[in-house]
Length: 105
Image (cartoon, rainbow, N blue to C red):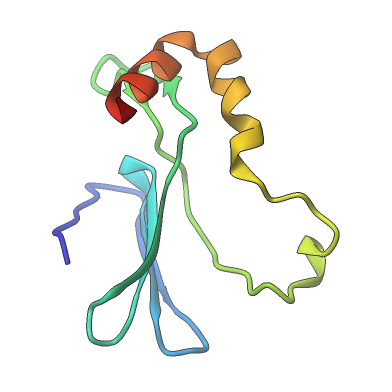
């Protein structure tokens, strides 16, 4: 497993399956690990914005994360396809979208 560090806005949560949800919020990253430190899944937010502080610049940070199970009532009937939001970055923060797509290449 790779190292991780968030200088602020981070947290973790023990899940019912005994895995741990880790929120590296300063870097827009959420991931789940098993008790043996194997990464189950990872999400890095594609939503970048220009932070008002010159110390941050372009960032994808967020505040916190909580994992809801697939049977959570609030998710029933919702389209959870993340690719449909890619246009938002292109429209509302084109310089971030450009950096994101250049990283994929």
